Length: 169
Image 1 (cartoon, rainbow, N blue to C red):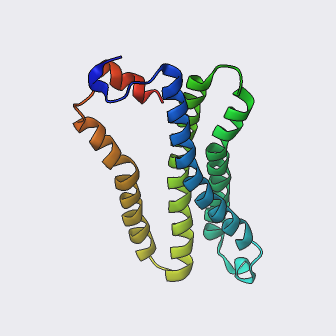
Image 2 (cartoon, rainbow, N blue to C red):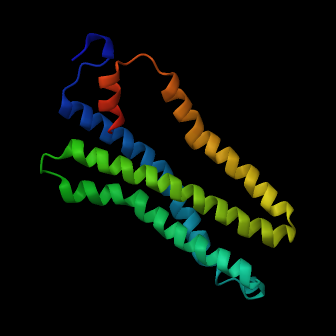
């Protein structure tokens, strides 16, 4: 291990640390997704749902499907861990769980935008809804993807081979 890395940990210790960090991230995301998905499921039972035009009903169906896919992706790492525990596959589990989490974030982005579109269309009944959702979508992309990628691009502290190893998790 390189002395300039900042951590002196074995491969297994790194996998344990990365798994613990991933679980903390998932706890935040899962809670929000479960609340949003519960809200979406309840909408269809509201009186005003029958007043929605066909376009809004279609947006609703797409939004519910996106919410379900998001929940599956963000809960998937728990299933991976449970099924692979004790098989000495922690590092691989971290890699796959991390990939599912990133997919879940992309799906969450789509779910949030779709939810906002439905709500803004019902609330405003005009094209301002698209502009507001577009602006919020841009903000999500900046906060969730652009800023982290920008930070990675600017990071010069780790040698390339160490970055590659950390990026797999």
